[in-house]
Every structure is written in C-alpha cells, then in structure tokens.
Amino acid sequence: MTSLSQRLSVARVTLPDTEPEPGTRRAARLAAERATGEVAIADLPEGSNDNAFVANEQHEGPTAPQIDGLLRVKQRAADALFERIGARLNDPNLSEEQLHILVRDELNAVVEAEQAPLTVEERQRLINEVRDDVLGLGPLQKLIDDETVTEIMVNGPDNIYVEQHGKLGRAPARFTSEDQLRRVIERIVMRMGRRIDESSPMVDARLEDGSRVNAVIPPLAFSGSTLTIRKFAKDPFKVPDLIRFGTLTPQMARLLQACVEGKLNVIVSGGTGTGKTTLLNVLSSFIPPRERIITIEDAVELQLQQEHVVRLESRPQNIEGKGEITIRDLVRNSLRMRPDRIVVGEVRGGETLDMLQAMNTGHDGSLSTVHANSPRDAIARLETLVLMAGMELPLRAIREQISSAVDVIVQLSRLRDGTRRVTAVTEVVGMEGQTVTLQDVFLFDYAAGVDNSGRFQGVPIATGVRPKFTERFDDLGIELPPGTFDIQGTP
Image (cartoon, rainbow, N blue to C red; front, side, top):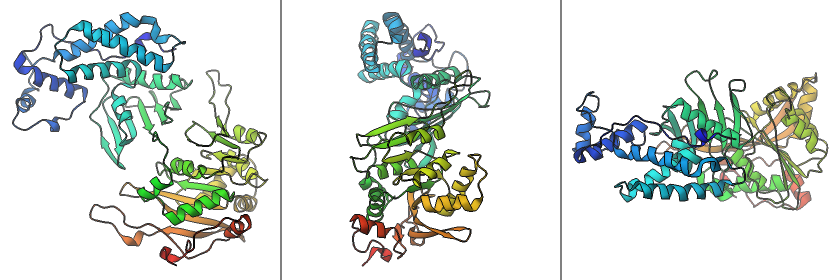
C-alpha cells in the first residue's frame, strides 16, 4: 500500500512569517502561480501593477514581494487533513469513491476551521489543489480532466508537454520536485498492481479510465523521471465521429463493417499515435453481439461494447524474475477458450506466428494492429515478427501463411496538419512467385492539396478496383451500397 506521506503529496514551500501587504497581495499571488507554473506570464493584462511586479521579481532582497498566504493556508490545510483522517487514507476497505467523499468532507471542515479571508474562487482552488495532491495526480490532474488534451508528456519535473487538437505544445503546469513526480508515478503504478524501482525502471500501466501510461525513472531517464499518458475518450469514438473527423468516408466505413461482419481477418497498420487502437475499437463494434470475443493486450486499452467479452492482459516478471505471462502465451491459451473472435491489441513479437496459425485454422474474423508505414511495410513487418518466434521457417512458407491468413490491411497515417486519416484500404490477394500481392481498394487523395489553415482537403477515394473478397459478401448475403468502388464515389 502507498504510505501516508505518499498519499499526502502536498508541495512544501518555505514561507515568511509575515503576511504580504494588502497592496501587493494580488501581485504576490500571481508570483506564486508563476512559480508553480499554473499561469503563463503572457496572460497578465498590460498596464497592470502585475506587469510592474514582473519587471522587479528578479531583484532579490527585502524589496521583493512575499509569497501570498494562500500557499500557507494550503500547507496548514494539508497538515490538518492528515491529522483528521490519518490511517484511513490507507484503509483497504474503503473504495476510491468512498475515499474521495471522506477527503472532500474533511477538507471542507478543515477550510472552515481555518477562517482564512478567502474569496469563493480561492477557496475552491485551495480545495481542488489539496484534493488533487492527496488523491489525484497533482499538477497533471487538470490536464487529465481537460478533454481537449489527448496526450501528456512529462520530461522531468519542470517540463510538461501536451498534445491538443493534434498539435504539440508546452503546458504551464509543473511539479515542485522530482520526489513529487515520483510519487505520482508510483501512485499510478501501484493502482494497477505493477511496480517501478531501480531494479525495474520501466513500466507500462493504465489509468482507471483506460488511458495508456508509460513511465521511465532514473538511472535510465537521465534528465529526470519521464511519464507519458495517452488519454482515451471517456465515450469511445464511433463511426460517425471518425467520419466527422475525416478519418473515414461513409463508403469506406460501410466496406469495413462488411469486412468485419463477413469474418475477414483485418490488420490495422500505422505508426505511433496514428489512432490504431481507436480504429480497432470502432471495427470491433461491428462484431455481432452473439459472438464470443477474446481480447489480448499488454495493457487493457480496448473498450468493447459487447457483453460476451473475455479480456486478457499480459503480466511482467515479478521481483524474482519469475511469473511472466507473454502475449504469445495468451494467444495460445485463447485457442482453448472457444473464441469466435480473437482481437490482439498489437503484435510485436513471436505471437504473430500463433495468430497467423489461428487465422488459418478456422478462427476467421480476427483483428489486430501492427506498426508499419504502408501496407507493403506491414507485410514485411509481419514476416520479421514471425521470425522472432524462433522457428527456422523459409521466407516462402512465412509469406504463404501471411497471404492466406490476412485478408485486409487498413493503413492509418498522421498527416502533418495533425489529423489522423485512413490512407489506404488494401486487399491481400495472394502469392505470385515469392511475392505477396496487394491490391489497393481505397487510397488517400493527396492531390487535393491543403486549405489556408494547412489542413489537407483530400479524402480517401476508391481506386475503381472491386476486391475479390466481395464474393464472400455475396455468399453471406452482405450487401454494399451501389457505387462503393466507383472512382470518386460516383455511380
């Protein structure tokens, strides 16, 4: 369990014994906010006394304004909260929701007892900050709650970057110390039953909402502990959302739905951060609810909406170097669990061979993702991953396995305007000599150019080729809208 000092991670600051003068209270408060990185200096109004303070804040000595009393109240409130609830912070019988209620009630009582002359805004800010430090993720909590932030990257205690609207920028928040950052990392990791220390300085975990977390601490992280959080939407994206974003077109969405309903084996290919898991979630939503689905992941991220789902998660080694359960172990075991569909979050090793064998032995309709920059690269990547299984198979045998197992490759790319688009839907046709033959069904139209804001105006368009797997649709009675494969989507 996390120690009391870890649960009560409130910033410690050395404060003067005297209160600031009334005329400098606002300037001093803004100075404290700048010191903690909560507001940007650029946000201050021009011509105000605060700007005069900015010009003088670098001068040392008795003329420098003092830090306002709000941080002092925050420290006293944290100490009083610790005395009131004590060991209950670590009570295993309390759920997270009950703990939040307990801290909120006690914190309100503590603030009332302080009788500090706080405005409504200052009082609410005080309560939120102490609660976030005690139970949340400290300065990251506001970024976690911000729905426009899709990724958070912490490069040591002083440098926090975020991705908003597909663009990367620096956030005004910061940690007070490396120790506070380490406590936040340990809090995340411990909730998931993982560990991170000098003997195991890297970890993959997740937040309660499913957001993916990766942490690296010294000595591997030379510039301070590094934390990367890839947030997932609270409400999983659906097909209309991806069409609205421009990721898919309606014709392409209907084709992919038919591919899933027709039990074709689909591989989603793309680079890091291109939205492979998001698209895999959307594709999995097309699986009929009567089928038994088994998902296999390193860290559970998929948000399937069906009821009949078995979710399996790999497990790293324990402190003794034992007990590791790999993705490959889970794929093998899943074959004994009577699956209708096997969904592998990502193939990155020898499990690729077992997955291809499953696809070739009656487990149709499997879904997975792979890191690759194009459909042709995805085939080469699958070949390499099969070789990692340690089986000395000839390349021709591997390629025959791939060509007969994989039916469709969906290529995702993150364009330079920050948008994520499906840039190709490619059919795996078969073998010609030693080569796996591919046939593009949809391709992204780069020739459409960009608008004044730099956003790509093109969309994925049909190449005019009717894929061979549509014969399977005819056998199953799956109908596609007329003109699905017509160039430019016109009849």
